[in-house]
Amino acid sequence: MTTLHLGMSTVLHIVEVTGIIAFASSGVIEARQKEMDMVGVFTVAFITAFGGGTLRDLLLDRRPLFWVEHQEYPILIFLMALISIPFLRHLRHAVAEKAIIYADALGLGLFSVTGASLAAEAQMPLFVCVMMGVITGIFGGVLRDVICNEIPLVFRRGQLYATCSFVGCWLYLLIEKAGVTQSVSLLMGISVTFLLRALAVRFHWTLPG
Amino acid sequence: MTTLHLGMSTVLHIVEVTGIIAFASSGVIEARQKEMDMVGVFTVAFITAFGGGTLRDLLLDRRPLFWVEHQEYPILIFLMALISIPFLRHLRHAVAEKAIIYADALGLGLFSVTGASLAAEAQMPLFVCVMMGVITGIFGGVLRDVICNEIPLVFRRGQLYATCSFVGCWLYLLIEKAGVTQSVSLLMGISVTFLLRALAVRFHWTLPG
Amino acid sequence: MTTLHLGMSTVLHIVEVTGIIAFASSGVIEARQKEMDMVGVFTVAFITAFGGGTLRDLLLDRRPLFWVEHQEYPILIFLMALISIPFLRHLRHAVAEKAIIYADALGLGLFSVTGASLAAEAQMPLFVCVMMGVITGIFGGVLRDVICNEIPLVFRRGQLYATCSFVGCWLYLLIEKAGVTQSVSLLMGISVTFLLRALAVRFHWTLPG
Image (cartoon, rainbow over all chains, first blue to last red):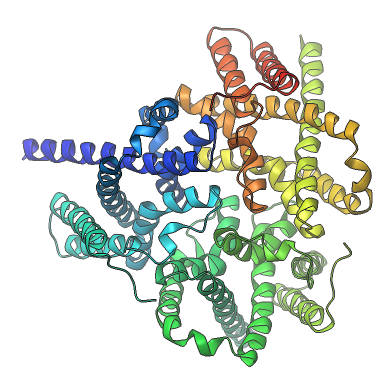
């Protein structure tokens, strides 16, 4: 049981680091496209990775913030911004882009479902829990686009993104309510969000306009 | 007395729903003009309706947030976003546009004056109370325009908007300070804001540039 | 000792007012360039002056906010916005622009270092303290540019700005940690930030792109 829990938390930790790097990378890429300097690259990467969770924590009045408790993550992004200047040319490789899409889908799943779970812990009503999950998952990207002076990508017609998070959060909350243990319901919510997103990218699923 | 209070709170409740629908509608319209999908329409409508009050609550450190306590409002906006896709063509009708302007003016009055009243309850200094009222009234629209990548409409030269909220909040706070009962001072503040805004639209009043 | 402390706090107060006026002025200028009316001018000036500190206080969960405790500052900016309409023509004079650059550098130093010091008081980890300092110093300008629909100036390649704040905050925190009294370490952090910024402007120092 404890071993299972330990294995689970290791898996979640690896997913977390993967997701943060993927989110930050999309920030680095957009900031570089806008010809920002290192300060801009760091800030945009940081906001993409932690903006959603920070907004959720402000709305729920939770402290300390995630990245305050884990200063290794801001430092990681600082180093990413430092080395991105010489290395970014190579990062824009087609293989890297595909890897980022799937790593991002993993991050979307993890951040959304843990966001919904924190809201549920704080006794929020059900629909609000789903909203907090989706906010955690997508608002980093929304803030990235606002700062880069673009209409947020996630609101433009394209392959399903927020919708995957929405479905994954509902699934997680309903399974959890039905009495399934948290580690199983977390894993199911994350997996379904990830799979839906991967399928949406693969088969070009969009919302009806 | 209790009947009067009950009647008053029913009136305020109707004004509230009217205002929320008007604010959300302006969000729906702007999001559709930017060719957003349903996720964008919902988010922009939601932020237009609740962004001002949420910012005020973050600044005043009030919890639970209004829309967390009343999850029926986010659900209402979710349904509006769902049905807006097929029905929006008809919503852009000239009569509907005029109705939205006046409903919006009602919302501006209610949100501004209740914002100022909550700040006064929290013992804020007078000028800050007025600012909190104006923030509550106008920042939903400001955030809507920022997300839609426009310079906020309310800051561009046009018919008085924030100024009506500013005058209404001062009036409310001064009458209240003079010892008038709250229900009367609330109604006066809301009515004056509404009337000023309606007159500004009707006679094209603007600030000197 | 008390006299020294008193003298110190008078100096800091003068620096504070100078910095606030400089930050607000840059907001006034940008809002006027975007042809905003008085409501826009006030809001943009206010956000430029207090946006960074307000964001820091939201992240640290500190209340009351600085401008709530000192309502004379919002009132000062309100008056600045009122008189800016007729007088701004003259404000765009070359001498005035240079004065604003140096007053702004003073504000950058003060706001950054006091931001870092408040975070240190709140027991934040070291790297997070530096981030809070930089956020306090630069995010007013970031929010100004976001509202004015521009990519933030501070993220575009130009003369060092955030970097000066970054260096000044590290210096302050390390000196303070080394046991130097706070008034000395504050003054050193502020002076170094100011000097670096002044030199960057004078000699066109930029980050490598």
